Image 1 (spheres, rainbow, N blue to C red):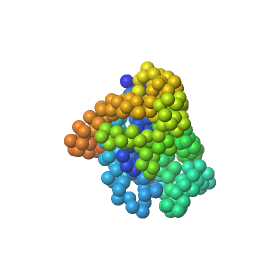
Image 2: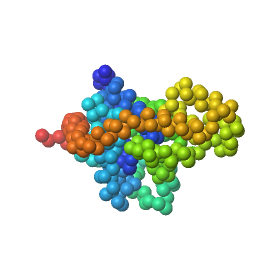
Image 3: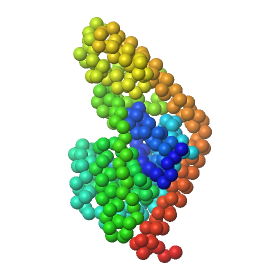
Image 4: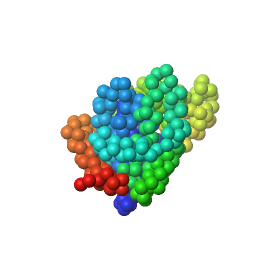
Length: 333
């Protein structure tokens, strides 16, 4: 049963198929939250334009794919509101209003702005207002629905504090309206990529949620393991092996303990370990693939659930904007 008057908002940029890292890092938490709170989950297509503004055509195609991944993974449109950011024009209006009162210095000190500017230097021109000001758009996405909390990872805490600062400034100037949303820290469950680096679409080192087992099999077979274990007779260390984080998330605790002991005592080889992981992965992905196949056969259902979510979000956003316009003396009807 959901907790009354406890609303949560979160979103994700549509940049391509989701992988296991997205599932364990974000979606598994969202799926739990939808059982406890009134949840609004949005496809952040305007946010995707901050770095893809030169060629935004791909974004439209990624939107239904992202919703498909969400619902296949377990988000239930009967238990949460799934919507597309760009279809709720009130977000843009609130972004404009909040940009008028947000000091430039607040945006320039944003650590993500500095990090991404350096990381993508020479690849993309990010010297745009959209990139500098995207935290204001993010604050608008959140504050529009006046949630009590936002599920975030540790690295997103600076963004949440900026959202709270913007809310405080608006309230100071216009009267108490926005609650200051709490950061609901997401449990840390990061998966390494198949090559040991961070799992990333740009590295091509992940396993997508919609990937068939026939394509996953050769990927798992070539996964990095403990580099110091050259032969089966060499003792291994599960804590430095690339496979074990996957086992901890998808293989039962009893079997994990057996694998750990067998690895340390050199009684269980890496090939055997990969076979068990493939079995675990197939069991884990089976219901996701089943839901995905049903949705792919009925694309009208996917379109309808997104339209319904858009309508529900639009109603809530319109009500918020009427109150905000009244506060600002811009409501004339």
